[in-house]
Image (tube, rainbow over all chains, first blue to last red; front, side, top):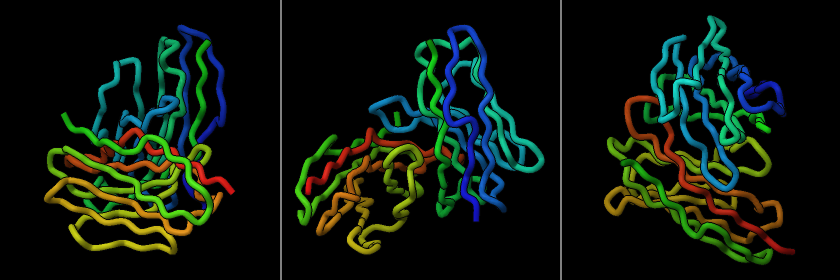
Length: 115
Length: 111
């Protein structure tokens, strides 16, 4: 079975540009969550989507947005990139909406570098 | 504010040693605690703990949760160089799928 897939693997952008990151969840999973991991820190929650509805939002500015498609894949968009947006962006999928027994499985991430 | 704290932040051991990694938390509406291993990019799932005092075990790895004292430990016995990684502890709190992560413990196992 394919795990969570993300594209692209690496991305280099300049300040002020925008970026779109993509994620395909494990087959049968309906929830996608996005995390940002800065070097040396644990991942920070950005968004959760379940059945195409936003279920949770972390402490990130409005430059960050996301959506989930009918096939449960998801896109994370970041506008007006800042140097501080350089990080590993991780996508996680789970079968449910975030219940206590709902394990999140992570993809390999997209490494974003902003110059 | 919800927080998860891991200790130590880094650890260097030799093959065959036993290590104990710690995770303490203060999270509203605790629902579960998860351990992940991160080698290059993708954190890979190790354990999910929801009940106090019940040890989860997988090979040389084991973990237990204490919901009264608000902590969990991850034990690795007979360490191997392949155990070298960052170990992340995360807590699921509110009624969304938001995982709150600790800073991670970087484990290096020397031959």
